[in-house]
Length: 120
Figure 1 (tube, one colour):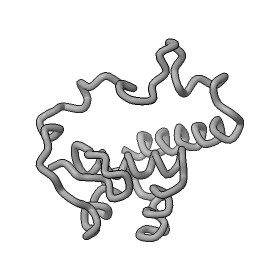
Figure 2 (cartoon, helix red, strand yellow):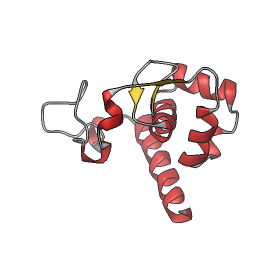
Figure 3 (cartoon, rainbow, N blue to C red):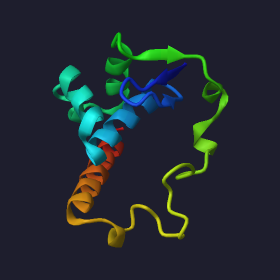
Figure 4 (cartoon, rainbow, N blue to C red):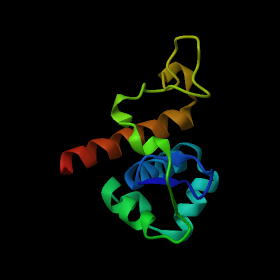
């Protein structure tokens, strides 16, 4: 079942993708996604993807939608495809393209990902 992001209305393939979308956007950009998570789950940063997905799915504000994305295996999707991807061939997360704060956020995200993978 696909879910619509309660913040930006982007459709995500399932609850785990929605939870990842919310969390990554909150960590990288802060703003409304972070505020939404903070208001509902003060400790959201400590959840693994499955736990956060279950918690997010239970919220009344999360809308389940019928969407063609339900039929797509997102693992087969091209990584980075879509709006906002640089055409220069330079990856958006290359170290030289980021300021110090962005590099610290990316390092934190990588560390959290490593910890989650180690626990799994």
